[in-house]
Length: 255
Image (cartoon, rainbow, N blue to C red; front, side, top):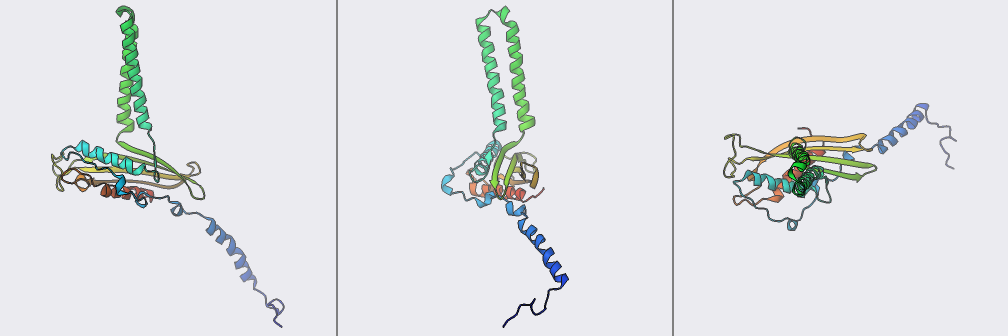
């Protein structure tokens, strides 16, 4: 008849028992820990954009403003997709609010001056003019100093064992060719101005108390890489380039 180890007098040594007891808590902690890499949400390059969903974009190659605006709009369309980020329109809302307030003040002042005699209406008209100038100046200063070169501000919340919040901020500028120091009249591989994109990204949890990842990148690419000689934009190439910059910041790259 088979006998157990205890019946035969064979026992585990105290050292073996101690190792067995002390190894299990560490193992459970290792299994329960969650690394930031495992919680990394879906990046732009993982989202497939059907070609049929893109409209043809064509601009004037000789106009750097049109080139930049076309790229800015493409960034917004790409990153504001349902699978990616929800665009925050705070800057636009503030500028619109200041603009409409100035319009109402101007209209009210003009109506009051029309209905009331000139001498009696002068104090009110003067106040209305001053308020209008203040609102107009505030709108201009806000656009220049606060909004600046911002083209996209986005936010996303995902759930992976806990609620993860992401915030992304993108700025853009046109960089003149380094050789000539001024914008060229035609876009070509040798003399085209460049599109510069700056990306800032923060990923956190627990209502912003736990920082999971933080990145900042800046890259530039010639407009000729995204537009052909007729001014038609290669949106697939552009979106891939933008997606690469965004994913680098999501991985915590600082540049």
